[in-house]
Amino acid sequence: MPERGFLILNPRSGEGKGADVAAQARKRGIVTHLLQHGDDVQELARDADADALGAGGGDGTLGAVAAVAIKRGLPFFCVPVGTRNHFARDLGLDVDDPVAALDWSAERRIDVGRAGDRLFLNNLAMGLYAGLVKEREGHGTRRRGMLATTRALLRSLRHRPDRLTIDGRTFRARIAMASNNYYELSVFNLGRRERLDAGRLTLYIAEGLLLGRWEALSGERFVIEARSKRLRAAFDGEPAVLEPPVELTIDPGALRVLVPSEPG
Image 1 (tube, rainbow, N blue to C red):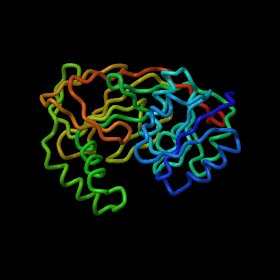
Image 2 (spheres, helix red, strand yellow):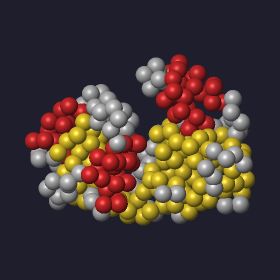
Image 3 (cartoon, rainbow, N blue to C red):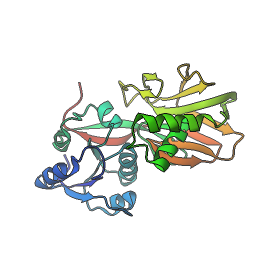
Image 4 (cartoon, rainbow, N blue to C red):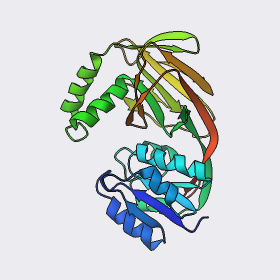
């Protein structure tokens, strides 16, 4: 296992566990950087003199560091100090004990999804959910609770569905979400992924206002075209804008991940 790790921690994520994790990481000889305003996560990861790159924070932060790890040919490790820890849960980490993730004993290879050159560990959302993410960022709904989330939902519903053409089929999509491997999915609720190494994308599409009705497509590649020149999107919860056509692909086994033990 690698001896020299470099860990990027977002001290604002989760419930303030970052300080304890940072102290425990340093005891293990892992160089730790606490993110400050204006820091470029990927630049920090590119410049690190390390045998492994790690991240603790939201899944968007994890994805940014994982992308650099792939380019540098280094293993990646995840410390679950985020709010929801979707990726860490699916990886099989104990999200109640983030320090345990620092005691590596195995390496796995898992898939990553891509939209063009940009990576996602969990999912890429377009349409209504992406609009909710943008509303959340713009109006501070991370901290305001259900009332603010409901208001953001109502504002987003004013937008007309995106007219998307996916591999020749046309949809009027309220939501289109591509996932890195298969999710059990319900309205605004991501379930667990049993596998992160099946080598398949799943593309979920909801038309109209009955968001409980999904069509799911599975494959290794999709091309999404749209009438609009810009699509609201969210990569692992981080807002973005895409210019169609958008090519979605799966990169099987691209990410080397250090874990305490093989899950299961």
